[in-house]
Length: 142
Image (spheres, rainbow, N blue to C red):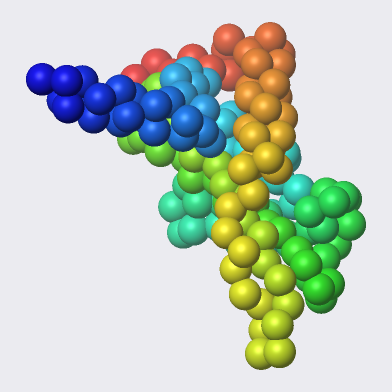
């Protein structure tokens, strides 16, 4: 019994320490969500999936998001995925870092601090967008 409680407590601590880079319960229309995500990508959009739900930013410097780092020794890029077939949508966001090696670039993994900064920027932009929303543009008759 005590072993089970210890295991449960350990699992709870592990789950509690995981940072989620998701924005849940986005009730705006898909085109609005997509536009907000694209305008908040550092240095603009480099690539997107055919269905427009996976959006990848241009390479930028991890120290300054306004510096193009396509050919620099260390660079980062953001990837956002809009999840859900209808409202409410979820947005999964990650910023990945890469370092130049002899043959190309090697992934250093996700930068959780930068990811959280981008999540907050997109979350704030989505909140601002709700205030600017035009009800007629959001209305669909059928």
